[in-house]
Image (cartoon, rainbow, N blue to C red; front, side):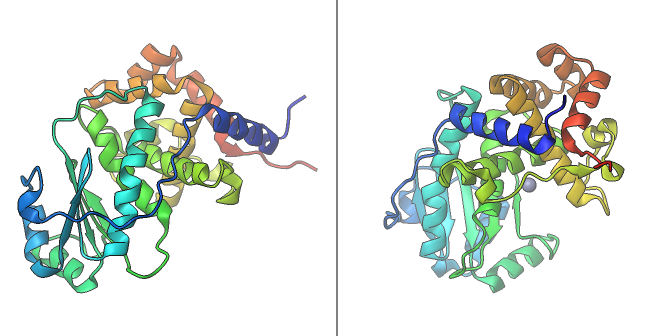
Length: 293
Ligand SMILES: [Zn+2]
């Protein structure tokens, strides 16, 4: 007898909650801002310099162990200041890589002034649609001030920059976005006592929309007309790999592909499973079963 899929997922999520490292709840406090001249690392990219040159007086700075923060609004700066290290710690624990040596600190630029953000995009030849992007060591994002801006998207963007720190090079898009999505849901869930269902329902994919694994894993651009499915399926794939196997295997997989190994080969080496068998298992997990009457 097959258990209904929804029950299976609830059980997996409940077990996962017990298994995962706990998310700390740092108390809100005023950020100790630091003058630019007193930051421990001032080496930033031309994009970073461009950002700080616009509306120069409005930028304030702060620093923690792994990050340097540049922000225009104290509340938004505080949100990021409080969360970035907590997310970092959580990922380090998930990967079993707490003692990873960081070469330098990451810079996070948080724009809250819309005009500055638009000027920055124009001067930097960036798409006008962008609300956030990362270049690896730096993260640039726009947040609307004085509004309850979604914490999930903040977590998602911070995950990109943290992930970069733990890897040797870029990973395929589905792993990059799938992991950022998965972890940002998880950290929010842990903040609400581990109940992911208070945030959302894990959404499965209708059979007709399912992207074959080969297509998903080889996509290097956000596929037109399928972006939502791409994110959802990528997240489900990462979720499946992390929740069904030892999460440290997932870190090993990410490290291998970031060194240039193909996903298929890394899957085979680390999970001891071939691509076709894996696709069958994953599809069974990710596709919404049709209800037969
Ligand atoms: Zn992303």
